[in-house]
Image 1 (tube, one colour):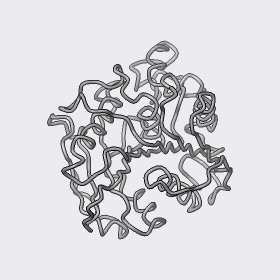
Image 2 (tube, helix red, strand yellow):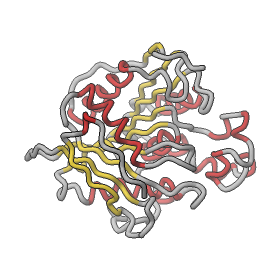
Image 3 (spheres, one colour):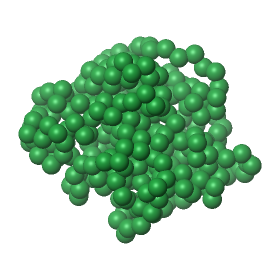
Image 4 (tube, helix red, strand yellow):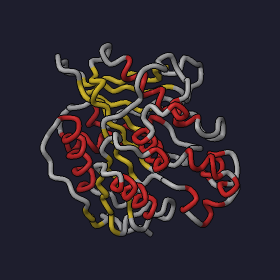
Length: 297
């Protein structure tokens, strides 16, 4: 594995534990990184878990540090522990291996909460793109047997999460259109064949399939000019959650692209979302539209 890059300055107050084995295998993808605040406290800390993007066929859990540092620029203090979960990519294993791994990572964090002074009842998940899809699945399919899998030693521990921050993740592959329907698209490679010919598999990978009354609060952030994951995908999920009377907030980034143009206002909202649900701070919530800081090309 390549040497890890130095941590951003904002994370200097954190101790980093890399490549912790959550699966009981030698697979380097089935590991997680844990970032713990150096300053000790008697109160267990809430955890924000980052799931990386990369179209389920690339990306790496080490990508988390730059994103987490953006949060810390806003919060200004180490109020949270962080984790970043790696998972098997579609070139190695098709769906539902990816969600099985992510859930195993959540179960490991909960099972080891006391050891690392973490709060097992305050676990948030956040991810972009394919990571957004996976955190949405974590949110809606908590403890669903088929999605739970049997990865790792803690199969009787809950994989439920406290809240979900989905940044421009896909929802229903069959409604994405265009090249997503191709047999070699990332979505088709994930489910093991052209999505139009694998409708049942696609349904199991759709977070809306599992929406139920006990799902956690969601924050969805999506740019209107996203050319990789259409903005309508975020709207689909948001509306499905609202139909079930669940707490869901949609932040529209007007003229924002696929992760482009998401300026400090979006990260302030993200921090408020976490503060509200992990620290009980009273923050008013409403759907809103922010203008992109950089127009998508």
